[in-house]
Structure formats: structure tokens, C-alpha cells
Length: 359
Ligand SMILES: *[C@@H]1O[C@H](CO)[C@@H](O)[C@H](O)[C@H]1NC(C)=O
Ligand SMILES: *[C@@H]1O[C@H](CO)[C@@H](O)[C@H](O)[C@H]1NC(C)=O
Ligand SMILES: *[C@@H]1O[C@H](CO)[C@@H](O)[C@H](O)[C@H]1NC(C)=O
Ligand SMILES: *[C@@H]1O[C@H](CO)[C@@H](O)[C@H](O)[C@H]1NC(C)=O
Image (cartoon, rainbow, N blue to C red; front, side, top):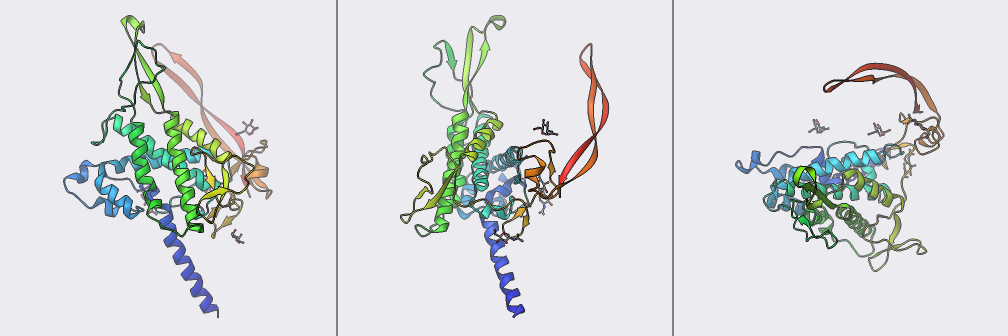
């Protein structure tokens, strides 16, 4: 009896980890640095078959666009960093678990947090590819060819080399969405719901980058007179993309799948989400306690703020379990003096501060 149950558990666990590897995908490019193109073009090594986490379609794209892979990896890495910044004071802090699954099992749940992760990763790819085009790193794209904005003052020149957001957007759509489009689930099934959710959130992420890209200009002219300006399209700082997507996270829409195979609002008193909005289909798991099934790491051991009433406050962060206090030594630069010319000299000051960690 116990034997059978054990076997069953093992079998379940195994299928879980397989699904896990499948679900977590190309994000692992962020953890396993892709070799620089020049290293494999000549040798024609089967790089794409060695990269972990790619779906069959993505593997094909990898073969066609090998030189893009480094930038996809960079984009993913940037996205993870941004995710951890945006969620640094939350119970779920976007921590990565290991190289292949990256975010771990929690991504199996179609929660708000999962929605954010997909969006920010897709955004990271648009960002990295758009910039790589501008910098001349890719043979299939160059400077942005966006038309001159209509409201640009007439005597300003349009034509500096801009970030190629159009190409970045198109490529990210092709690559990131590939794994979702390969699937063919029954209409109205849970799996189809999740596929639609991922596609929507990927799109929201890409659009955030597109939307925030803006015109940047540089002055020319005699002795800084700025009589002449050259302007081009420039990506926003990725922090701004993170901020925007965090707002979208806060207002994400709860959806369910209809029998016709479309996502619809759970509560139709709300406005339907646009293509810029995040959507989710499952409630968030309990992030308070460690749970092997859901993949939640729990908040035990997390630093918290004793005086804050927000999510980073000990009360909420520790989920009412209480916290321990300890003293830590912080070293800071202080008494800085400017010396002519031109350097700043500082002293090191140590300070003993109280810190709190969740029980
Ligand atoms: C994860 O990747 C890093 C960097 O490539 C490597 O040093 C480390 O050994 C890997 N860890 C695991 C568990 O595979
Ligand atoms: C882990 O989460 C699952 C699903 O929410 C729940 O059924 C289970 O009781 C949890 N296990 C523990 C040890 O908390
Ligand atoms: C996030 O929380 C986990 C679990 O409490 C902790 O192990 C990890 O160090 C944290 N990561 C970051 C980036 O703060
Ligand atoms: C803790 O929270 C308070 C109130 O929000 C804030 O003023 C303070 O700077 C925070 N302390 C730290 C160490 O973050």
C-alpha cells in the first residue's frame, strides 16, 4: 500500500519536473550565458541544440538568427533584475531558483505574478534587440526607420540613428510567442486559457517598450547655440518599463476561459483589458509559507521594516508570525571632501543598525 503510494508520488513528481522545464523556457538563456556569435559562426557548432529551454520553434529561430541569442539572454537577464527590483518589498520577490527553471514552480500557476514575469521578459527582449540593431550588432537590422514625428519642429533634423523598436517588437513577438503558438489545446480548456494568458501578457510587455520609446535630440550649432537639432527615436530607461508594468500588475484583470475558447472577464463590471493590460487566470498561491507543491519559497528569513505599514513592514511581510531582531554593521562613505582638482575623498563610517527578519 505504502509502496504504491510512494511510486505514485514519484511518478507525479517526475511529470511535474518535466512540465516545469517545459514551462520555464528560454528564460534560462539569462542564466547560461550564450557564446558570442564569433565563437561559433566559423566552427558552426550546434549551439542551438545545446541551449536549454528552447521550444522546437524557438530552436529553429535560433538557427536562423544565431547572433540574436546573446541579446535575448541579455534581455532576459535585465528583465529578471527589473522584476526583482519591482518586487523587492513584496512577499513574492521574483527570486530565481535555478538555471533551468529560473523562477521555479510558481510559474505553473497563472497568477498575477506570473503575468508580470512574462510581460517584463518579453519587454526585456524587445529592449535588448532594438538596441543591438542600433548598435550595429545584428546583420538583419540597423537604425530605426520610424517616420519623422509630425509634431517635430520643422527646423529640427530627423535622422540620427535610433533604437530599432519596430524590429525589436517584431522579433520578440516571433521568438517569445513561438512556444505558445506551437501548442494546440482544446478550446475552452485550462491549458488553452494559460496559452492565451501568456500571449496577452507577452504583448503587453512588448507594447510597454514600444509606447515608452520617445524622441531624443541633440544640439549642434556655433558654441552651443542649439540652432540645429538632430533627433531620433530612443528607448526609455528600462526602469520606466518596469514601473509601467508594475502599475499594470496592480490593475491586472482576472479572466476565465469561455466555452468558445476566448478569455473573458470574471467580473464584467470592469472594463475589458486592452492589449496593454496584464491578465491572469488563477489566484496567487500563498507566498507566506514555503510550499513544495506551489513552489512558494515563503518569507521566513526575509528582511522587513519594523516601522513600515506597507508590504515591506514586518507585520505583513512575516504574515503575523513575528520577527527576530539583530544588529548589523553598515559601512558608508561619509565626510566627503572635494579636492581641487578633481577628486572626492571620503572617510568610511561604520554604523550599527537594527535589522529585522521574519520568523
Ligand atoms: C548555473 O549557471 C552558472 C553560470 O553559468 C553556473 O556557474 C552554475 O554552476 C549553474 N548552476 C547549476 C545548478 O546548474
Ligand atoms: C501547499 O499548497 C497546496 C495548494 O495550495 C495546499 O493544498 C497544501 O496544503 C499546501 N501545503 C502546505 C504544506 O502548506
Ligand atoms: C527572495 O526571497 C527568498 C525567500 O525568502 C530569499 O531566499 C531570497 O534571497 C530573496 N531574493 C532577493 C533577490 O531578495
Ligand atoms: C522603513 O519604513 C519607514 C516608513 O515607511 C521609512 O521611513 C524608512 O525609511 C524605512 N526604513 C528602511 C530601512 O527602509
